[in-house]
Image 1 (tube, rainbow, N blue to C red):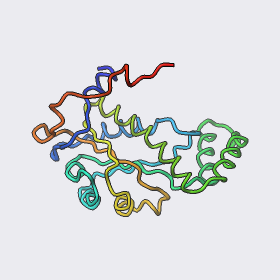
Image 2: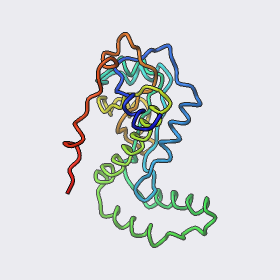
Image 3: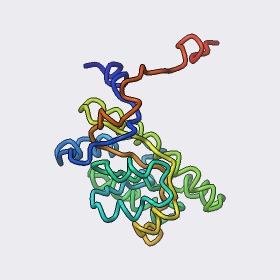
Image 4: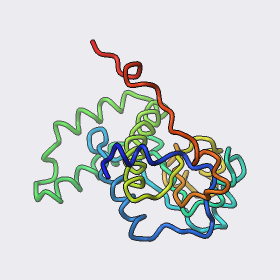
Length: 210
């Protein structure tokens, strides 16, 4: 199937079958697609926390807009962004870049000095606003990859960031949750949206040509 067909197939599932689990192979493929997503300056300023443990999911349920979706999904992917930029974080990423490419460390020093100057003039709040936006690129790619594998998904911002951050100990990792991606297989009986026609704004209204 083409990507367009895959995207027409998928919808934000409203009820999952708790007895059907996503295989490790398929989960790895979705995570790899997200890992390969482009990010500003190639910094990848976020991490994905994979929650499969049912006890942890139950602890995250309070504050969830769709608690049953969280509870019954096979996996919950938590997209969590750096709470701030730092020179050390930037250097670590670019040291990795040069090492992988067999280049001398510091090869991109003029560029990293520039972005360190830019971020150094900003507040931690501005940093997080920027790192959080990067996560949505990976989220979109993960959604598309899941659709290609015919794995159901539900992107979500309707949850308590404070609860998720506390349960997963994200503060100690210098991370803050941004969004969730529920994965699994739809419960056709209770997923009220699955039988409905997909609705989007018409192309001639959605696209504005100049």
